[in-house]
Structures are given as structure tokens and as C-alpha cells.
Length: 83
Image 1 (cartoon, rainbow, N blue to C red):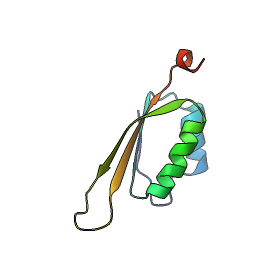
Image 2 (cartoon, one colour):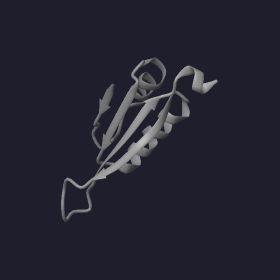
Image 3 (cartoon, rainbow, N blue to C red):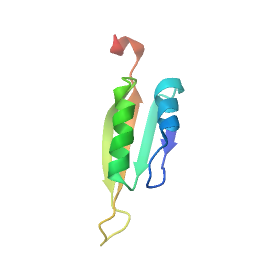
């Protein structure tokens, strides 16, 4: 399992590439305080066809502010499922 919680700038392209092309992790959990960079990075993870999004959740860790943490969970698609 890989768990990432990057700074507001999101993941570097090298990290996204490693996760989608080289990692053999069965699950990826992406926690973010910036929905725009999270959407960008998660879109790239989905483009590779190796992971599928199975769950999303917003977590209000900062009550009475506009800030929210979002959690996306991806599972690896077995090779048989991709063919």
C-alpha cells in the first residue's frame, strides 16, 4: 500500500509516474488539502489504466473554515481485468 499526503502543490510528475508505472502496490490512498492538484494527480493515475478509484471521502478537519481534506482510495486492477 502507498499512502501519500503531499503539500498543496501535489505530487511531482516523477512520483505519479513511479506509482502508475513501476509500483506494484495493490492500493493507493491519496490525502489532500488541495482538490485541484489532487484531481490533476488522480487523473494521471487513472490514465495509466493500472488503478481504479474505489472510494472518496471529504473530512472536515478544520470546522468553520472553507478547508477540507479529501481522501481518494485506488485499487490496482488485475491484469486479467484490464484485458
